[in-house]
Image 1 (cartoon, rainbow, N blue to C red):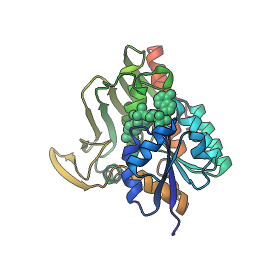
Image 2 (image 1 turned 180 degrees about the vertical axis):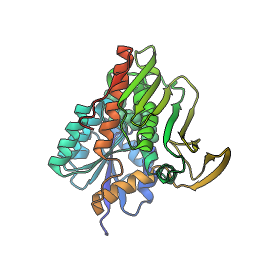
Image 3 (image 1 turned 90 degrees about the vertical axis):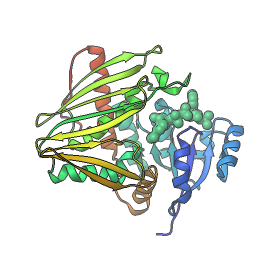
Image 4 (image 1 turned 120 degrees about the vertical axis):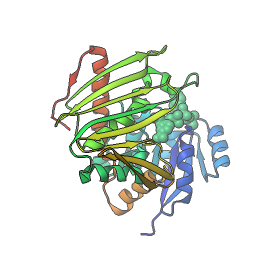
Length: 331
Ligand SMILES: NC(=O)c1ccc[n+]([C@@H]2O[C@H](COP(=O)([O-])OP(=O)(O)OC[C@H]3O[C@@H](n4cnc5c(N)ncnc54)[C@H](OP(=O)(O)O)[C@@H]3O)[C@@H](O)[C@H]2O)c1
């Protein structure tokens, strides 16, 4: 397969910096253009990052017929809108997490992707890393026995004034920003969807949840607990506990090149080393596999829909101050 995919960045969001190195080294992907709301900004960014084309509007980027894939790292409330516009313009889309802020938005993305025959996948980069694949292999091998309890955290101190994550109208809040990771991890590890959730939050000054604490119940008496926060110094881990063993993952969401996870069985702990790679290359190559080789993207739209559904139920639970049950329909 000799075709190279031309990528366009929709905005100069900070996270685009993470995608540029993989796009520039990948043999099947090429970073062709960047767009910003201002031409001046786009020009400066393109010059600094050696990107051949710069557009002063997102519409102009979508009108470039040589662009195959759009990377959408806009603020959360614009994910669905611009993903759908990109698909309607004939582009495939790698969209940042959370893919959307409601199940209805995910359904609209799915409808557009189907109608225009384009691939859309959520940029949960950790899912493609060899460490995550190793964790899935261990859980599925049965070494942990029957799964019982999953715990996880993701927090950091958010100090930037006016950050998009602080705006409640824009999908701000710690659960949308970082809580989505341990939720996604627990769903991935169990291979199940929770049937009941319960959440508490601490509201920040702008009304977003600055800390979120949640619980999820799965069939088979499996429970998951997680927390996310903008006021707790960087802290992240996952722990998967079964009837025969426990797996500790110290760097679950931003794994590096050389990682170790810990498998404890019969009171003995085995260190398992995992050679990783550049964190963000996986999602770029997964997109190329999907577009060029016709493979299913690792993160399907149904998977993203289920994650959004759980987050919405957890938010509803904090408002109602009671557990929320999720029906089995529409998983
Ligand atoms: N997977 C990961 O590791 C990871 C890490 C960080 C963030 N993220 C995700 O990436 C997304 C962006 O996060 P970020 O921290 O990179 O955001 P950011 O630096 O605040 O950038 C957001 C960009 O959106 C554009 N934009 C369009 N309308 C806007 C508006 N009304 N107000 C502000 N900006 C607007 C701006 O680009 P222009 O001015 O160029 O148009 C801005 O630079 C979020 O969805 C977040 O969840 C993912």
